[in-house]
Image (cartoon, rainbow, N blue to C red; front, side, top):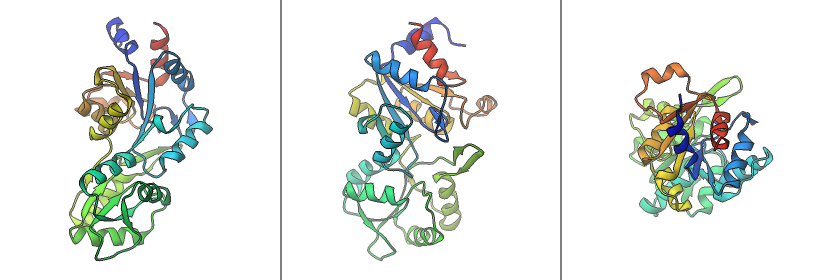
Length: 271
């Protein structure tokens, strides 16, 4: 139940950070009022940023995909776990040579950003980057396992266990992390949601204070936990992975809970 005080707080927000899959759309089909919500934000001096842990696509591909869905979007509106991973590596491991378990798009974006990448196993490789690889081949897991076992720096773009699709879910990067943990007995440094690094990147980019930001998503353990870690208000929508019964068993309680983004739209336009 959202009271007038909560309505006022939501209506005062200026930066709206949205997860994508399960929040604004599912399998490329937009949820009701999603476009109207974004248009309202834009027309009322607000900013919106699409924050995704999904590292299978490049930033430019996300812009293209969202534009095809009718969503006004350019690179300034997109923040990905891959971008945050690139920033982390350039700050902490700029001279290391990495092997990447990821899509061709992910590898291309990382190379373009100046990350040093090897296309195969080599004794010179000092790190492994694990992403949501929708082009996964067993050889990649074998090479990654060998390098991780040998002590390579081990970084994962995000911890999502599954990715929502029309028929249910498919394994995501978090599932790959579990596979490699069984093989190597090691876990990675995780960069994307729920780590606050990715929200801090957005706040710095948009020059917005945390008090004016709202994180909206469908996962308690990534979206909501990330917003809480960064000290911003959170909105859980029940249109994706999380169902109402899951709230009883999870410690990450969102600031707000709604069935989908259409409820947020109705609150904002009731100003």
